[in-house]
Length: 445
Image 1: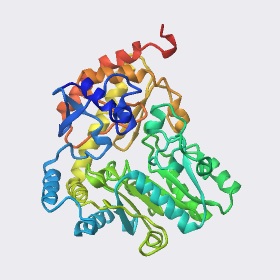
Image 2: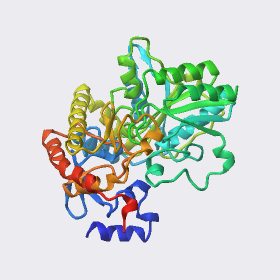
Image 3: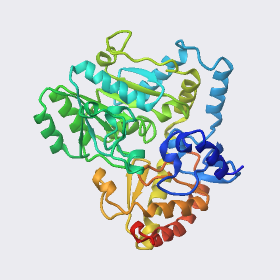
């Protein structure tokens, strides 16, 4: 059994051989690795080769893969049944824990939460709630921010869309796309002008708490607070997407980082979405917010949302166990590792004279093959992205599994020790040389 034979088998029955597009390695070339096991900071493919993992299941493996407490919690839950189609005590317990962790300086980020199955479902529900609450139709999003693959939110959405070089998606009706206004990130002037141009018509602004789907895009100073102030002034809602950053960059997500560092009372979003870590690696997400908005959801209100597997007991158990184990020491270790590794990446490129910019949002970081800060999607696209293929391939050959796209963040876990960091750092010089020597695409032939 090899990665190549498994890929050929998958391509015969699955479109592109994958069930999520970035996994196909289209932007980095070569054959996708078919993984069969993972433990701590390592993943193993079908050929038995082990890699230091810097994908971490795109975020959920905060503690490392197959953490014993999480595995034990799932096994206990599975012994009682896999799914009931009915409410279980664990759902309220997890909801209470989420609310407890997102309380900073006596300020609660949200009051009510509903569990769903995916981040896409969470953001889709949040937008529907915002429209139901305001009676308005238009939604503002930022270029390069990814909020799942629902029709109205795919325009200029970064992530896999950027990786594949697509402007959006076929199959989205023009009338639906027209209800979403896409603005440049970190541009408050454009936001003010858009509200002025559409008085009383904008239901919500949706934003990643810190951008992590066009590489890392860090919000400018007080940018999120300004969004909260502006939307409330205009009668619109602010939807904060913490599917990636929630409980990964801080015990209370990016909102928590900002709340702890501010000299003023923390601002709060009207609605917030969570994913990834809330399910501990199993399919689970959440939409949360102020009580009067959340209680517009059926069965209390007229906004409908439902899901047979919402609050699945195995996913709830995994999320609860992950969050219980994610203490301050976990975040301190990951923050330290991110600082060491991102600094080593900068040093490795500087040593060989190839300009890169490393952007960091808490313990998430990414690199861009360009000089200068990356503040928005235009900046992220204005780079020599073609160099990443050679860099990625060299690292993979050295046993380091990076995200298979330059437009993704790198993830570390609490299980990454100095040993793994040393392996990664040792592999960097050869990978940087490969990026330096990579031929321009237009130079082929």
